[in-house]
Amino acid sequence: MNKLAARYGFLLSLLVSGLTAKGQTIPNVTRDLLNQGAYLKMSNYDVTPIYTMAGPEGKILGYPYLDTTFAKTTVVFYQNIAKPGSKPILEIPDTPVRYNITANDLEFLMDTKTVKAISGERAKLFKMERNGETMTFINATEVGAPVDVRGFFEQLNDGKLKLLIRHQIYVKKPTYNPALSVGTKDTELIKEAIWYTGDGKKLAKFSPGRKGLLSAMQDKEDQISAYLKEKKPDLKNRQALIDVFTYYNTL
Image (cartoon, rainbow, N blue to C red; front, side, top):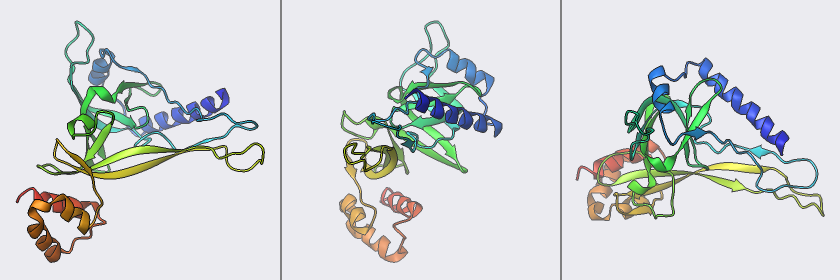
């Protein structure tokens, strides 16, 4: 088990060093803010297999992250996270961050050797820049999710009815049978994206397509039907779906 942790710890160090080489360094003023944070902890990159198996160790396939690379991110907190006597911290802007979906941790790249994390429970939202676009993630409590649902939903549009994506990690467990010596000892982490709609009070699963849209927008069904007939949007395209929701929110 220690060998496996060491192997992936080395991989993590490569990821971190690669990012800083690309200029993803944290500003000194932001580092000072983070060092004043009362709730920051050292990141726990846990790659321990779900089960131990007899014989050679299995591997962890995949990662618990939304994306393994750090991205320029602004994080807004519910409450002040500073240590007593320090300047209040309610927001940390423009900082290299990545999101650990499994742990529900936001990880901050402090320097080439240090990653610190804070529980996602303390963050109201974060906005992350990737490939020239800004992605907005809202705490589950803000979208009307059940109390047992933790983490964040990606919010794709503004307005009364929002299009949301729940990113989660499905753990495919080892299937190895020692008696028959068949199956795999590997644990696979598979990232899933599940669509939802929400109005801040009610959250509902959403199936992208004409039927799903008309079901979610029943109060404006005639107008939406006319829009779909005229525009003929490709509803497999994310932006086309966003455009429909944007139009609905103007009605």
